[in-house]
Length: 431
Image (cartoon, rainbow, N blue to C red; front, side, top):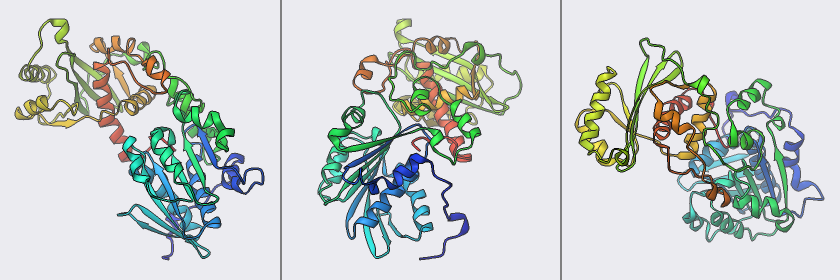
């Protein structure tokens, strides 16, 4: 094994009581016969690192030549959130790790024991097919609440080796979520233990970082990601919107950068939004809104393209230098725009991640609106969570009064989220 560079080595800071419980739980006499451990709670609580380390340590000490499973929402997220740091830890602890990326398999050895850890993505219902046929001594699920129940059921059914155990790690979702109902609420029936984490259980976090995260979220996301509660998404979606603080006069100076975001509709309204950057803050300086149903007449792609040209003209924008973000599903409209020389990019249409991220940017003062954002301001007060979906344990919005806010979400996820990840990767969910 090659000698580790000092910058690659990993050293644990003093562990909290709950982290030590996770690291050694399977060695406690009262827990040795338990089938599963669940670590849930707030973000940045130190769950993932200690869970994955404990999982491999348990497997290495108790098995040799056995297959194990590790799953994330996708293999990419599993590698990013778990495997990359886990490899640093294991190599620093003198394990030998071979990563076969083509087969998505880690071969991990220490003290004469070698085991094989297969990586899976629990993306959708079809993912259950991926784990059929494997016989495993253990399965580790990172962010299990983001996976379909069928995948988890199929994976846990593969644990037929004597002494096999399941390891679950997640941030809270709805109290009616299948994992909350079938596992957390059924600990005795499932022969499982639960360790609930808060950020204070992660000694590596300074008070400054804890305070920063405390101000990032509001509403249901604050309850889940900061307080670690399994709470219902109900009421207004953007309940952090403060008109007095977030609707301002634009600086009225030369802006550093401009973007236009579009939510395109046929019968539903079509919206253009102009976003301009000045001294670290993005201002929504102009808004176009046309609803075919409201006006009694729908426009064609070419007519909307004409309106976008006029929108650019009145705001002194160049179609070649100011990019336009468009919903990926608006194929014909994007073609019309490109034919006219507009620089078109596809929006990221992940609704829940987009809402969560945009709320964070609002809380941090990175996005502000103006009096020209009149339809957007109305939508802030009428865009709501779907109560029927909440009763099913799902987070969904009612697809009404959302067109301006969809365009704003497209902008946030394309420009601000990309910029954050490119720089210092502060926005990192699922840790």
